[in-house]
Image 1 (spheres, rainbow, N blue to C red):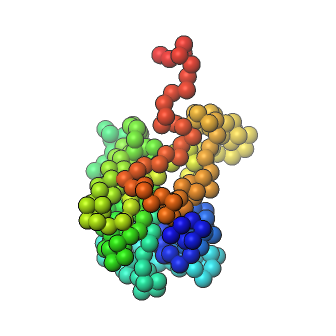
Image 2: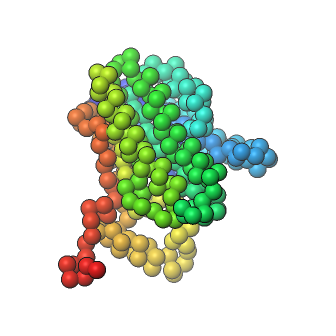
Length: 285
């Protein structure tokens, strides 16, 4: 399935927030790939009216997003922590299209609550909640994607990791740990599929400093916004934020046959942040 011949393929995209990753899948759709959007429903442990209302809103957002993309897109609700829901989502795709060519595991959370996320004060509940979504969700997605892809003995699994999975993040230990585990699991899946004689590739994308709505609370509003924007951008070697479209380009590459010899890899989209320091030798401390 080349980038210019991707029509007829079928993809399942596990989303977190549509507004953050929607452009990625619009780009893949523009290349001709038919896909199902599955959305992590933010259902709290406590089944109260607020959580039920939130689920209804999220479902409506997902359905509207799929409609906006036309007949080649469908929406299917999914709690990525629930194996039975993964089975249902995959089976729905197979019933609709008869195949699964690409899975994008993108659902994730940075924090579970407003409590501290450092290694001393993070609660076990918060630690487990983050890993259930970020890591268990990826594990289950890979597991059932392999099952769906096995009959055709081919496919591409794309896992969204992060720069935070490579470096230490002292105030977000659960997030960093889960993303590091995704990097490693991606390699295990890639090697397993190769050992099984399957042409199912598995790779991870490691973004950092991508300008998404997640940054809005940090950047704020008014005159200080541009100042903060420049300050954060200055921390990257390329001195700017990355764009969702740049992440989309990598996802399209990994979905297509142009990446047929790429598996078990981790692709950094971080403006050079993981490459090393950019300070002059005389300023190194």
